[in-house]
Image (cartoon, rainbow, N blue to C red; front, top):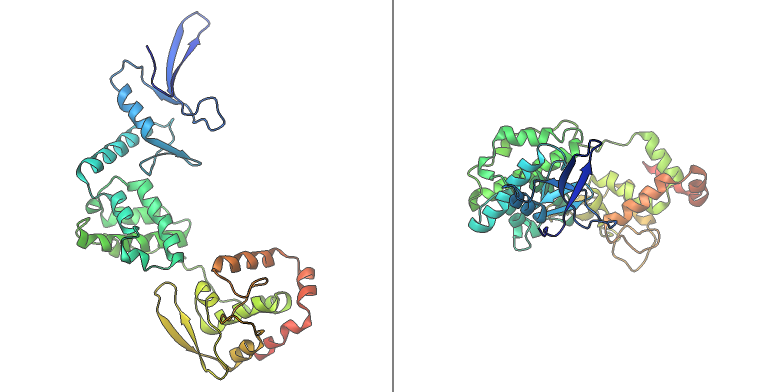
Length: 331
């Protein structure tokens, strides 16, 4: 009989002469993009067509197999087929009934047609997309209405080894459920009663020795960014986007990327001395990059900061010179 595309059979002969025929599904067989071979029932078996449909609906990335966005267990494990069957059933049901499961809720929330999503800062969207992907991969076919506080806490606790990730996931799941209540996805936001993972706040004040290293080895424009963060207490992305205050102004405007709200922060007399040292250029931005008039995104700053961290002390000292500590004496 003619086998479906990507299906092939392998015959193994034993020493006694007996033969055993195995059936596999291998997409892109005999190429460098070949999938791992997935064992199938015999073509005349009643489960063959159902499992072939699962294989044809699957996708694969560097971590393994997915079906409609749901991350599947290892294809050799006993949990693979039950989870794959569940994912395919959810896909079919969603298409037939427009069921309001987690996958459809995440996609609707992260749609460009949703002002709640488009009003978020780009950095917040990036973090929420990662959390949304995790939700789809783990419970994409489940109904938000069936989620309990215990279930949500378990999902959060499973990320406990990385508290910052766990708490960001919790923040997104809570906002997602809250958004879903008036839209018929669920009746209550059960995440409100969950607990954060301790240790999720990664930012701690710098000790004095860290400032000493900064003043000794970092170029002025990097020192200036650190000083702006020190004197204003704002987030990295908000500091990078600060506009240079005019001469004589005693406040500096900071627009929070997360809320889009603008606040005016008093300029400390010591901070004013740092601001006055910023070289004049035709940019209205306060902070310049090493090769640009200003950073267009915080990513550029992070890249430059990481290069500075990887640089040996002698090279950094030769580049900055002794004048780098001038304003440090004002602190």
